Amino acid sequence: MLNILLACLLSTSPTSANAIAPNLVETGGGAWMTWIEPVNEEKNITALKCAKFEDGAWGAANLIVQGNNFFANWADFPELGVAKDGTLFVTWPQRSGPGTYAYDIAVARSDDDGKTWSLMGVLNDDRVLGEHGFVSLVPEGENGVRAFWLDGRAMTGDGHMGEGGGDMQLRTAIINDEVQKSELLDDRVCECCGTDAVVAEGKAAVIYRDRSEDEMRDISVTALGRTPKNIFADNWKIEGCPVNGPSMDVEGDTFVAAWYTAPNDNPAVYVAFSEAPIKISESILGRVDIVVTGKDKAAVVWLESDKEKAIVMLATVNADGTIKNKIEVAEVSHSRSSGFPRIAKLEDGILVAWTDYNREKGISTKFYAN
Image 1 (cartoon, rainbow, N blue to C red):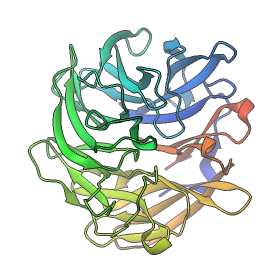
Image 2: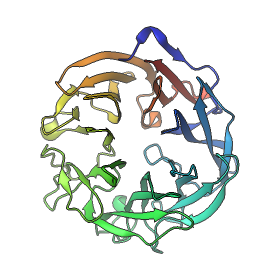
Image 3: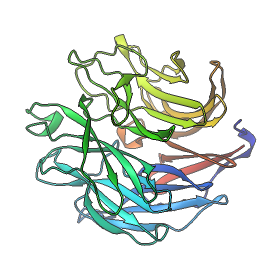
Image 4: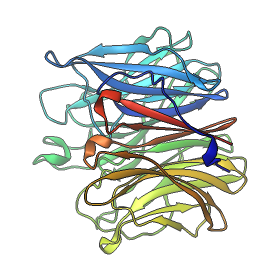
């Protein structure tokens, strides 16, 4: 259970002013955070960095890469994956051409715990000047990770915002000593809702927003060699992408998923341990992340909203439908610039990261002890 009295706003953030797009991944009792921050705004130079949280404190920020070809995006943020042998892999959106939505997925790896990084090329194995992003990484094999991502190679024109057509795909590939050939998982998915992935019973699985021929955009789960299956039939029919992807986690025999939906203009955030979803909020913003914290128990973050502000919310949800310890973590911008709050489970508590309302602070984090 989250202990509100032992919540600690961490004062030594590893990020700099105007940092955005935090992302967290658990590793060996601690957590890694990645983010992007401006280096020289006049020359449009941006840096991708990482830092490790362990023993109650942040380590130093390490530079992964910097340049002027980042596709800096409030919703499509970098992703870090940790192989079983400790090798680190990072992906990020990188511009590939002059089009607004022409970008590839760049890949780098580190063999020395994030101190130095080497570029590996791109994840998407096509040469289409289109959209590729929203990556999830999970360990597979001894020295690699499996990647899942949204791939626009079958789309034409300037992506989903242009005059073109075609469908966004969901694809997967292994990254180890090199980037392996990709494989198709679903040939028609929502264009810009993020993915999430887990390893369940030894097999990597991905959760994402699907897209039917009649524009139902509900949440599905699939894995290599398996047919996609809806988590729950929300029957949300919407002509455009809501930019609001799902999250899932698994530990032992406890599986949990969280997602945003708004059928018939009734927005809500749901959590499901089984086929019966639990409504935790009527949030109009969503932007969920979830982790299993114990047998039939999870912690979930999302954004609440009123007309003037947005709030990062945190709650414990049980499989029996009870919702406990609903906490207001922080106020954030009501605009897209607030991005997505992220959460990670540590051995002794929960770590939450978000883009701070005060841009001089960059990204803030808070730790909740067990």
